[in-house]
Amino acid sequence: MLESLHLQNVGPAPEMELELAPRLNLITGDNGLGKSFLLDTAWWALTRTWARALVLPARLQGGKPRIAYRYTKSSPGSYSYESAYDRKAERWSVKNSRPAIPGLVLYAQVDGGFSVWDPARNYWKPTDEPDRPNAYLFAPQEVWDGNAHCEGLIRDWASWQRENGEAFALLTEVLRVLSPPGGEPLIPGELRKLTVEDPKRYPTLRMPYGQDVAVTHASAGMRRIIALTYLLIWAWQEHLAAAEVRGDAPAREIIFLVDEIEAHLHPQWQRRIVPAVLGVMDALTGGHRSRVQLLTATHSPLVLASVEPLFDVEKDAWFDLDLEEERVVLRKREFVSRGDVSNWLTSEAFDLKKARSLEAESAIEAALALLRQEDPSWDGVKSADEQLRAAGLPDIDPFWVRWGQFVEERRPVKRGKR
Image (cartoon, rainbow, N blue to C red):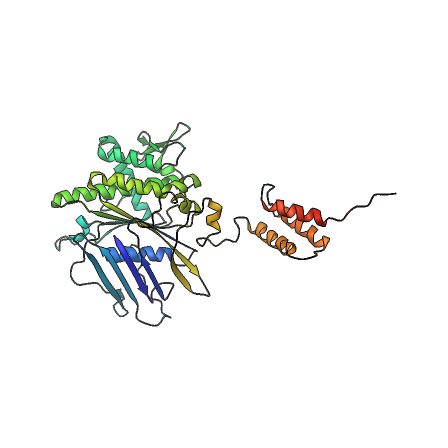
């Protein structure tokens, strides 16, 4: 498990430090403050490879750039190292000796790309096999179509379904677990030929309205779930097979990095995805009892609300990035159950003043200013009331109770005719 990550003079802040929890680690913050950067750097610290572009030190920051990290290894104790950046060689230093083994490391990027570092296949790379990669890096389309190291989702799913063995049973179960609660589960349909020219038989999903739809034509949210399902199964099955060939035990630890875990998902799925992924990982490892650590960035208040029932301060942590006086600040925040998604919107995670539209928020601020005045004019009150109604503030909004009484108290009395 990744235990700590300490960055100096690299990234959006002069210094960033994380003391990570052993099970679930949530990272929140506005766009551009460093969530993906932290996941990229965590992947490199664990694998000594870059899943995307090389992370470069900030040119304007003084001091020596460094990345220090610590993680548990297959043997007792922890492995730690402090890497320095060599500007002439344009690379980060690593120990010349073999690194320790952190476990099986998986990284799902928000664009649909996926990376795998397998200790049974990448760590023991022989010198006479130069084509074996230091890690398996899949561009988004390679996840579906495959590359030199993987058949890809379409071919593998079809093969697993024809064999109807353990891999297809796992696929069916994982799809079921990742399906939204209360709705129709994702169920594999029949293999189907799509065009005259294309010889392949494509996997399908059986839709709630009775049709089998090819996975290539599924919605973006379903494709996200399908891709996660496939690559989790592919990575674990290939790891087990390689470990058996080598005569080794399977990895005792799995580290799963996910950028924007809620990407493309309907709210019903957003509030299910983190508990489901943790459950899926336990189901995949089965009797091997491998420990799982999940690091995920999120923009979703539903994701944060969904983990309230399972959050354990001994196993889980929440990190938040903020911009304060033109400076990025990373904090480990206390996780407090808020009971309602709108309360998360106004929390430190998202920093909204109100869980309303911008127009309604502005109208309420103007109305509150009048409420604070000792003797506001009726014209001002009437104008604020019209602004609230134009902003579309619904009749059920609790602000109307207070405001309605205020308006009636200040409404001019109409005198009747004599």
